[in-house]
Length: 486
Ligand code: BG6
Image (cartoon, rainbow, N blue to C red; front, side, top):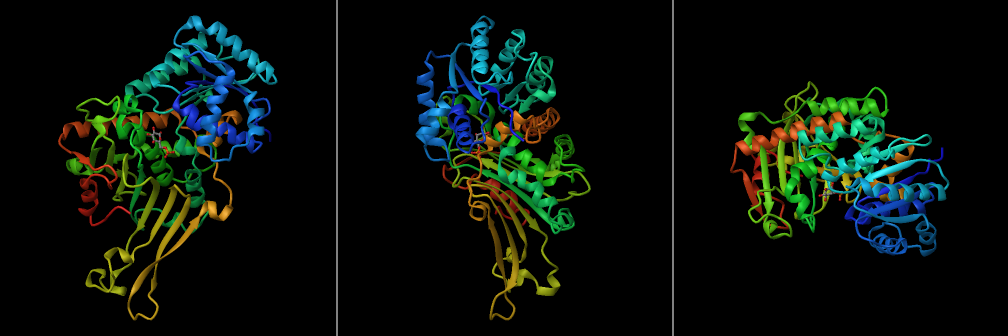
């Protein structure tokens, strides 16, 4: 089935996201022949520039950030579909020429009447722009569709998110709002459901009887770069936990959906999110770690005595019968030793009477006798399973062995970037990989409550060295439980 084309308008067309993620994704789709021929793009920014200047700027970003090699001939055909419009879109008086420009562009590219508005700018600008689009009859039309894509974070907390959602619902219907969490476009996140539900060996073990605990890590080696103005206001909890980490948790832990349609999957994720809590409150101080990398306060646009966390680690509980008593340890942070995203499921140890007590020295480490299932999200997608074998020639020694599946090595294709899939999804009208309002509301309720618990137990805020594994208190949180981060 062919994908319907559209005119895509990027508000924030000269910004970081447009350059680093959106333009490279569009270029890759074009190279792979997956971009509809009646697609066109209008980048919107405040500075004056010509179409050709804008195209040149995008070309240099694409050659830097795209995973595909540069093809000048292909670029020349794509460039013809790209236009630029200058204007401050907070103000209604700038919309008449803008509407004209966008409609002309749509007609020139085939006149399908479909418009996709992409909000790639600071959240406080979403509302005035959406209201202006409505005022100028740009959110509905006689033919074609109108859809809005909204970048995360959707609000800064529960009350701002609710306000934004009320505004949007008064402007356009829920089915036309696509709230992005780009992690949902990552191959391995889509793969979680397949691994769980297309393999009869895993699902029967996916519960408190067999799983000791779960770890979800999203570690980054980069700092905040020049995003200080945004980041200092949000921190790791609002930037990564409320969205990416909770979506990974929801997919990993939700109940099997009865059907693979967007609503059913989102309903199951929502039920799971509603059951998540910080591990019992009386211990909450040691189950919630905030950290900041050394040198953060000297970053551009960061407050001199900033208390914003660039690292967080938490121990969470999922209060339902499947997961009762199973800890979920989550961590995310910037300026760490490595860039790596993964979910590790540690299964319970086998009965010790059979192999002796692991603490008595037959095994090198207590952790030698466990099974681990690792879902590797990045840098290289894959799945690894650790199990136990007898060491050859040794009488009693049991050693860990690993089965390691590397997805790009097996399929020999470049994994599509998350944004490529998400853009095609929106053109196809498929909401599966987007967050529903209810999920966002639930994740803000949890995030706000964790923030307020953190404020109440002041003092748990550690400085860590850039390039390290993060605050020591995060390691201690697991050591206390007889475990360690994988
Ligand atoms: C974004 C966050 O949503 O995700 C960034 O705002 C973070 O702070 C980024 O760096 C991580 O995405 P990825 O795809 O590089 O893991």
